[in-house]
Image 1 (spheres, rainbow, N blue to C red):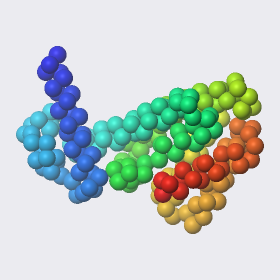
Image 2: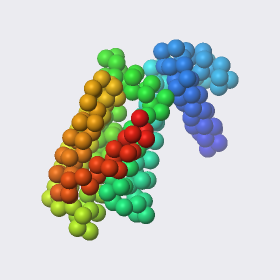
Image 3: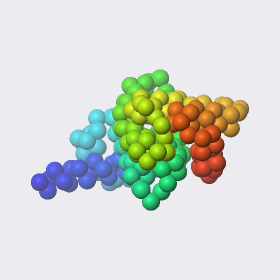
Length: 210
């Protein structure tokens, strides 16, 4: 059992170092030698865990994605926060606004990483939709919302947000406020809540993160 544990710890250590280097140097400028030197292992040890730098990228991206989802789920379950605020916080917590997040997003949008991009999207949609479905059902139960199709509504919200707030699109969009406002208005309509209920908190949170 100890050997298995040490192997798992070594793998995580490699990923920790890779994350740090990708965030500071960029993925393209980071070599496997950089990772080996920083971790202090033999090349054979690296290749025991990962066959290539591309495989390391896959693991880093999926681990980063899981960390965002876990953070979002923790917020969604915090009943000390008002439900509307909790929905907005959960949504904005999925933003990849760190240096590492921006670098990883840049990489997965490249044509050669299309399969990885699809894996990330599938992972996000399958898990995050359930998180929002649960909050919508909670809102229905306490009379906040009047949403007949919680799962389908959650799916539409998350799918649209994933497309609308794609970092490349946000950076190139000359009217970000209109994009954000349009998204909020449609979410409010889907949840059958008063117009403006989500806008102030959502815009403040997006401004803080930008």
